[in-house]
Image (cartoon, rainbow, N blue to C red; front, side):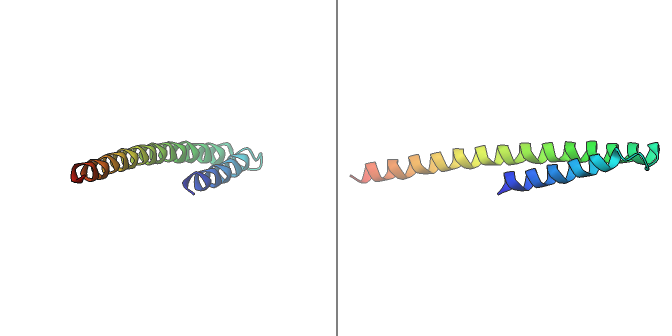
Length: 77
């Protein structure tokens, strides 16, 4: 789900970038759009990194929990 949302955001950014190439816009307007796109791209990259770290942490927690459950079950036997 998260990956799909990122793909949609990137698609929207590509559309904005195409608008930035519109010759009817002034050079200043196109430059402003490019600057915003760079800021947005940086933010999205940070969000993706946080999500990656969270998935890793969740996986580690899940593995430790599974180990604990197996260990507890083994000790009862």
